Length: 334
Ligand SMILES: NC(=O)c1ccc[n+]([C@@H]2O[C@H](COP(=O)([O-])OP(=O)(O)OC[C@H]3O[C@@H](n4cnc5c(N)ncnc54)[C@H](OP(=O)(O)O)[C@@H]3O)[C@@H](O)[C@H]2O)c1
Image (cartoon, rainbow, N blue to C red; front, side):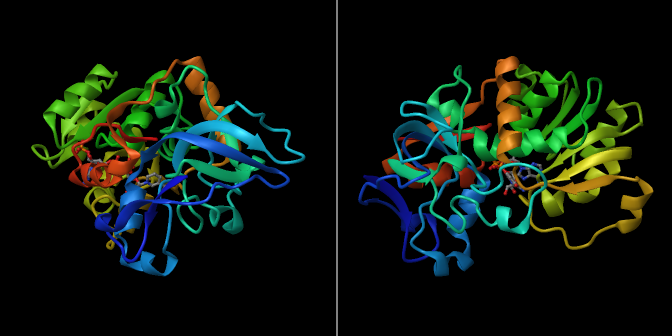
């Protein structure tokens, strides 16, 4: 089978498709023939990290969708022919996250899904919504589940105001889930063209954070001075302080990403002054994935795919993500 492998050193140039032996599922395992995979910013960060060298060779990408092609003895959760997604955390099935569960991320300590076939525990895969294409379902395990958990654990309810930063994978899912829940959405972007696309998807308000660098003030004004109920905080150093300015008293900031670097100086007084619920989020459990899939089905949500590349052209897909020109998701076809 073909496998995309990062080997030798960090960097997009070190990604190559190689041949690897096909595997047979053992007891309790399933073999999945992968049909599509999607990129997350985390994959770019992993491939480019100078720290990755000790873990090479590594098959990248956590998110994909495929067909169960064989099952080992004792498997009951899925059958041959089922369409499934491998779960981001192979060992976080439900309940609160634990250290051991969070150590089971695909394409972290263990090989990811950018290959023709994966063999995983039956507990590490979940069926995907029937209405979605393979490419669309391949967008769910990390980006969608992170956005889902950020909003659901924040206590999202109809009439709330959600602020989503930028128009990447997590933020566009946040927009879609927030609108499905009856919330008002404020979205930010560096591009007016992307803001128009976000409006077409249902965003109520759009702020260009390049031409309006004081976007938190603008967002607050849009709420009549009250502040927003939820921030999907993916920006890190460049956005965190303004997220605290934008949040209403007692609002929820889901701390997810570091697109503009790690936050170094924290205005702790502003944090307690806002009585903000500041909540670190790492993707989610299988239980949460299944709840999210039910919501996707009930609300006919379709993941937004911006561009597609063949597996062999994975380097171009990573370069496209690095350029930041995408709106929503970038997908690899097998
Ligand atoms: N904690 C977790 O479990 C978890 C899970 C998923 C993702 N993440 C993190 O969340 C972040 C987003 O991931 P992703 O996969 O959605 O990324 P992505 O698809 O690559 O999104 C990138 C987009 O973010 C926007 N952006 C960049 N810098 C920004 C800034 N300073 N302010 C506002 N928006 C900015 C840009 O949107 P415009 O082009 O519209 O300006 C850019 O196109 C990453 O840091 C990722 O590592 C964490």
